[in-house]
Image (cartoon, rainbow, N blue to C red; front, top):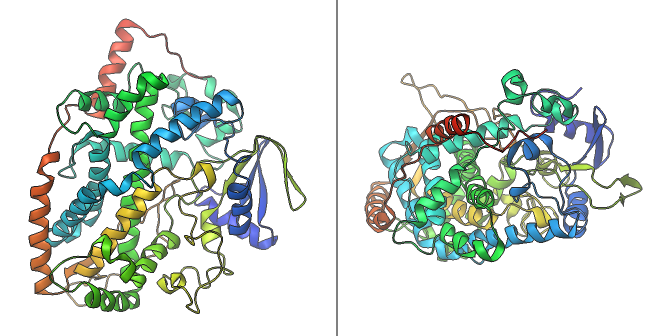
Length: 506
């Protein structure tokens, strides 16, 4: 039976026991193939991307959720499905693709400066600062308005919903994922089926579409993503649900995941303080105390670059590589048959903890990513990690996340000494590098730490740059009238009063 907690570790152990890069797990009548090896994942998902770009039938996440209106779920088996998927992928690339994100550097840099300023004033609230930062960057891209404080409903409600979805969507023997094995359970109405967790409720309007519509009706920031979607809408016959999902996917691709990565970075600094000395030496030599790092410094900071890569590798957020892939035709790998439509998943945990590529894998070691260093090992692909998925289903927000994580990690390393928390009696509060959440997107459980500026000169620089950043970000000040909780509550009442032709998905 599948374990309820962190099944990816169990899949890794099975792969080691049978010395097999691929293992098949049967949940009822449904086989799931798990890839636990980087080279196998590269061969199937990258080199054979044309075959493995589709999705299997996903009852819980797709049919009871956003369905085929969402890029993440879309099938690409038939030509018309591929055409629609290409439209969505093109629009997302225009919003946060590798060529697009460079134009966001100015406000992304300013939001990163604000994070450092916030850490100066309230270091114990580092999680809130990271969530505000990551969500604000995405909100500026999407709507042209920033998130000024962590009480903004985009943070308190949207991220909470993302956490719930991640927690529910873990392969296992418990509800709601058990409905994948016994789909007849999804036919029961929500009122008498608590195992559905409210899944399957189709609403007549969409929260993110309401936010998008609100943003385009305001003057200014006509270069925002939602303005682009509304202008391209008639050309591609975009429905309301599609605009909603494209906008919402920005937050899924760039807010919760980015903030979780930064929390992992703080944990790594506390648990492995020996990695900070080389970082400080490099930053002091290249940057100095009178300014913080910029992207122009990146090539002069190879250790910082390696440090960020190790953050992505050490505890990847999307621990099972996002949603499953499915081949569009029967395929073979080393004599194994992978039938058309099979649920096939990449186990990022196992891939990033393979002793062959990453000796002593639970040790945080940036030297793994320094070219020519004895700790470096061959790995498929130029990045050296598989944090964001593979092939044509790679995370749309990868370029944005990498860009933002680099500047923020570099700035925090430059500005602060991050250590384990000390109690009044002088003893140290330990941290647990294995104490992570159980969701599809994992993050460390809450832990205490100490974050203090490295010098008085640096403290003054952080304060000066933080105040300047807030002035430059003033142009993005704004507020939404919508709250997700009240929005859907009102909508549910309206549906009961006036009726709706939308039914629950069987």
